[in-house]
Amino acid sequence: MLTTITKRALPVLAAVVSTIALFSASPANAKEELRVLAWQGYADDDWVKEFEKENNVDVKVVFIGSDDEIWAKIKGSEGKDFDLFAVNTGQLQRYIDINLVTPYDMSKLPNQKHTLPLFNDLTKVNGVMRDGKVYAIPFCFDSIGLIYDTDKVKPAPTSMDVMWDPKYKGKVLAYDNGEHNFSFTALTLGITNPFHLTDDQFKQVKEKLIALKQNVLSFYTTADEATQIYKNNDIALIWANYGQQQLKALKDAGGHVAYVNPKEGALAWLDTWAMTSGVKDKALAEKWVNFLLEKKIGQALSDRQGFGNTVVPSPNAAAGDKLVYVQVVEDPTKRADLWNEIKAAQ
Image (cartoon, rainbow, N blue to C red):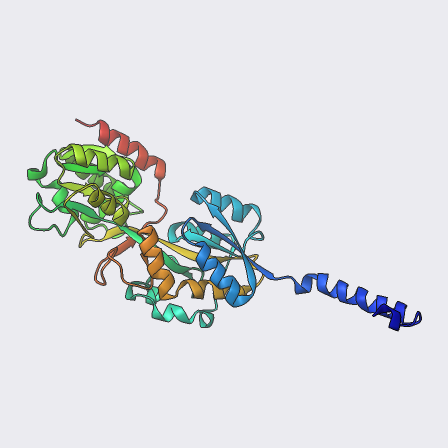
């Protein structure tokens, strides 16, 4: 009690109390913060809370809605506002070009050793490495394959070439996008790099797309639009820009449909985790990525979002499937202009 303390001791006690209060309020005792920029579904609340509890940290997540928004936030702050961000392999290259990302120490990511065969050897995953350094860790993906009506298309197709088959005239649904259409058609022609076409290759692809147009009933832009067209028309084949998510929507609508990744290669997107050049605690950032490579997270990601994950097998791709990850194309404007010409062709 205070009555048992001499007046002489009060200044000493006050000093001790002040020191304790100052120490308690010191930033050194505040929880460390991990700053994450991600797409919706890539950092769910239950995952965040588990990681925070295990590591005694705070995770601050900002969700984004476009590749341009990611670029604006990372480039605008010179990488200093975030520690980690989700980015696809095609977009990643411009961050590497101007030193906005930090390479990983792979010894800190033991879970990468247990990923699926498609993603286990990062030297074989296009776009995640440069000059022998790993700048991004694959997290989720989806292919852009072919959906077919199992009642109308027999036997099951193995190639996109089936879309040109005359017996399906007026029964093909295609996606309204010049960049992707030139790329997937280039693959059907055996062109090795569908994202950087020569003038002669452009001519070949254009002619083949004009021929495809003869079989196409309609072009769609959204997955919902494709589902409505399918429900109201005699559709046998759909070029599935939205992958397995689109397949699920069609099945939910009562469609007798199945999905195939063509033997010549399916276009695909691959989202990764990259560390910024301004990462505050590299070891903590690497812990986050390693945590997200746990099987329970991968399974939950696929169950909740429909995407393929890089840890647990999913219907999005079989071990032998050839996935050709989307890259920045040689001339987006040229592709758009040629696509408009193709759609206008008689």
